[in-house]
Length: 238
Length: 394
Image (cartoon, rainbow over all chains, first blue to last red):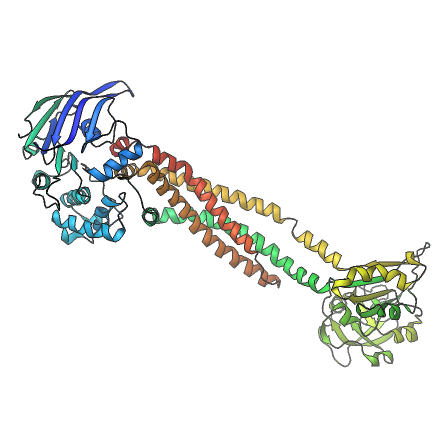
């Protein structure tokens, strides 16, 4: 087994407002580098909370979170931002493209907060678009694309910085099933050491959240949440 | 590793943000533009109106007058006949001119007008050096010369000519001084430094004596001194003019009058500037309002940027720069509008165009300050938004 890309131990998350709700209860999860993991569960099972905590967008009420070996619990907000810009890529159900920018500039935004100069950002963005099969759409505005294309742009934006971990929150939720299947295949292909990365020694880990078991089946490992606990884990390949 | 946003990128992001909502951005910038234009125009128009007088002041700061005082019974005591020559002997004095009031001589356009209806014009005897000394220009014709001692000719002040309806001069243009016709040989342009010239009909001392029996010394002497030594000259004038009877003469510096007029022109500037400031504040509140709405509308963008690794400060800077850019664009447009308005007003009122550069700088600085203040609260809200809540927003 390779070194852990993500490591959760004893993670609890309680929302106090408006009424106290326990979203996660004692979650322990280790995701190795290069794994492709699907987190499934019914609505309200705590999937989105888990993703927010994995993505350092939210802090756990208790427990520790390690991203690419870094313990995030003691980090300042600015440091957490650095973890996100350096090690994490996000794909959302609603794409969140910047409508007034071109496809290329949307993807280049993925490197904006790393301080990469504009010309280099665009160069790498073009390469990321090639990886997701959208070379022909570089000059289009985000608003001119179909749903599937928009999600591919969002994926290109997430991988343009070659993050250690790619987190996808219901990436097929706004797409029809055929288009969604294409997106899931793309995400699954990005995982592991053979995804076209420059240095094969640091493979991309993909964690996908979905309520759709057919989508989850495309990932090698499945983790099922219920009422804030992991009730099923097909386990890391050993 | 740190997350960082390069400065050119920060500007590019803010610019893209304002350009994505063109109409809204243009309208909020317009508010600032109008306010800045008002401030610049107020300063510029007041300054232009003053510039005319200040030019005059610069030219006339070395002009002094010596006038006869009034004795206890209210009768005018003429200056000594020798006064003009005595003053001319003071070394820093450059030119001297004397005038004398020719009392109780009505000035009329013709005999068809009753004597009582003089229109406020006085007859003044004047020396040939007068235009040079008070810097008077001729509007029409020429000034009194040596021949004026022998012939009944007169030069009219600007107002006097206007009141009598004399717009051009011919060989037969005559006015009636007392009961005698005088040929008008010239009309003076307005003399701001010596407005008493504007309502006068000027004749020579010789004619005043010959035709109206006016004798004795002048009633007022104008002189120009070396600008460096005006005060020194003023201090010796009374003693030179009437040795031993100093209380009978009054020495004045007519430019003091101009100073007072300049001060009067500036009296309302403060008030109008205050109103301009209020307009700027209102425009600033407008920008703040738009920016708060913008932060609410763009929560998902804020969440996305946080997910991409933006720090709180990066979001704050983005929104602060957006509002400052709007204000700066409005400020620049306002400067242009204000200068244009000033130019139009100055042109219409015949004043030179004068805009204080510090006024332009202050207008732009005020716009930038207002923009930054207006953006501060929305920027803080954008920075404080939790990424998860921002991403959940619809």
